[in-house]
Image 1 (tube, rainbow, N blue to C red):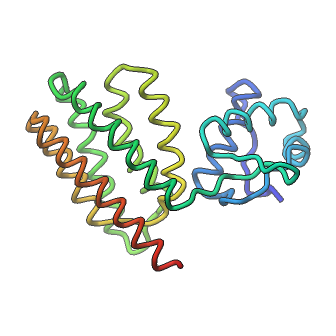
Image 2 (cartoon, one colour):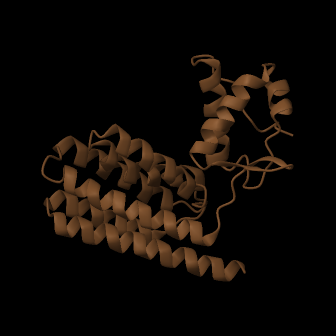
Length: 219
């Protein structure tokens, strides 16, 4: 049942090993939304006790990646349209505040790091077959780095928790979204807070419109 899960990395404590493997499997869509997480089977696969598996699942529940349905079991979370739209509103508030906190103190090497990420994303989009997993991970990193640069650990942790839920829905590419990424970068490069916040708002509102349109096509 869980043949596509990797072995546990030995460099971490057992609880962290299980948590990281399950989280990566969810974010890389090896475990799809709605997949049941059977604690006994997972413990048997890795030849460990149930305790670290239960601990990992509790952590994933706190991040919204796993949900428990009474009398049925534990499942990889499914995210409804309204939930996605609300998550994007939360992201917008986080990223607008982030811009306020970092705009005056951004270093040249930080701008260079963002630029290199965007160049990598450009290269991915030019491929005939796009690696959606890598695209999504780099997309998330582009948005997460400025939040990390606030040096506010609580802000970053909360942002990452909701960002992982959003990432679960990001399985398609967007050339228009990539152009918006460049607009955000250029606004940061200009050191204009208004320009950054306008670019971020445009990007996330476009994301909401895209999600709504995609949902209509799937209905």
